[in-house]
Length: 187
Image (cartoon, rainbow, N blue to C red; front, side, top):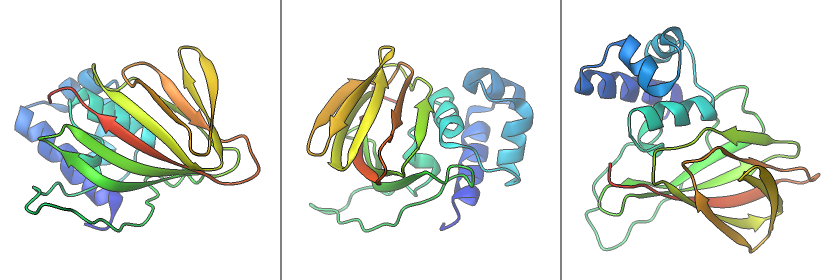
């Protein structure tokens, strides 16, 4: 499915039906309004990255399950070649490229994230036990954890608990690119 809005919509519907949740229950679990969840399910609205993280966390699901088809690994190696996806029209300064969709046996997914100049993305806490590994491949970013911004330069990395409020920003005049590897507790 090449249209991210359709994939998000169908995944949200499927997860809600599988759990037997009404929109009211889904709203309580995710912290996203019933009206917004309904619009997303009907394909009338595309959630921001922050809202999609809230939905994934509330459903105790991986982020990539909403944007990639999860396929079992059938070979000794996997080669992925994707393009950056704009998940929400207003998120024009952040682009996400899934490299490895969620792998249930490893409880892991990996992305390349591109932050254009002036981008600041604040993320709500993910599921309990989530750990993120950030490695900057070009440029410089700042990562917000424990109430402070920390500078991470090219070829530097940072590991932190993703189950706390955190964020990323690029205050430079050039694009910054980083790898975000996410490990989940058992889903």
